Image (cartoon, rainbow, N blue to C red; front, side):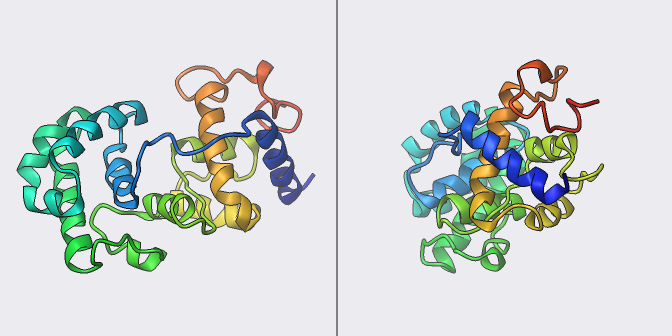
Length: 211
């Protein structure tokens, strides 16, 4: 089985196992996803979902966040860790959204990457979840699992993994595929314990399980 065939098999098996996978960050507007994904760096999505409730209770829109300033934002987002840098990025991002983009989150990779604190992972998440465009989000779960499965070989650089997966994953499957990898990585193919290969839906085709 070549890697393209392996990828298609993995997609089918994960679809069956996780039919309802989606983004675990809670948001109601596109700009809120940008805020949450920045806060999620080295923090759990569950904690982010709690912290942003307090943030939006005080600053409910782009304008109010841009007017708040980094110090005020930091006071609220500190529980997510790296509070200073995250607050500075959120403040600068909201200011740019207001002043440059008229409050509308851009819908292209090129424009999204101009926003402070937005890298390819965040941009792909927005493109896939908000705009329904082809996207591959190479977060830590994705990188760990595609290496274990055998879709890439010892590659840990997010951009290189993304490029490799674009050659294997049909464009219309990329976004949901990555969400399913997150669910599988949390439930079965875990990072901090030995993977539960005995109950893995991919055990018959995964390189790791076959070792």
